[in-house]
Image (tube, rainbow, N blue to C red; front, side, top):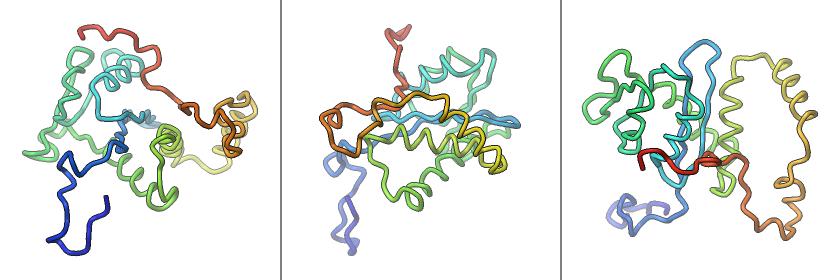
Length: 192
């Protein structure tokens, strides 16, 4: 919903009746080290089960997590040591609680939506996010090395059945196109 020109005519976009069900969330894990890696997933909402699955399957045991006070991250408490930021009080409460790594990824993702893609369709958001986290991880690598890595992986990867011919609007166009499902193999979540 685009805001109208005059402030008096604008609807409050935070109210449920003024929102659509098309809005999606991106959940990101960022490693805080030299050669840091990024893992991001698209979800219908900032959901605890998606965050739980990402941390359970992709975070090394003994790692320390940093997150804001969103309720979906409450479920992560038993998986790893957590440091939480309450952005209502301060952006960073203690020196070791910074979430700037993830926030910088989200900032670049918003700018990419405006400047590179112009629009990110929710149906393909997971592919956009996968491209962005790949770019994020390789942003300080020289172009030749990036090109070599890309070419090596493209040549070693079989034809994607979900991408082959998608522009031809064949019947398979109506199938769900998911590049990476963060909940695949989730099954029953312990404690739920």
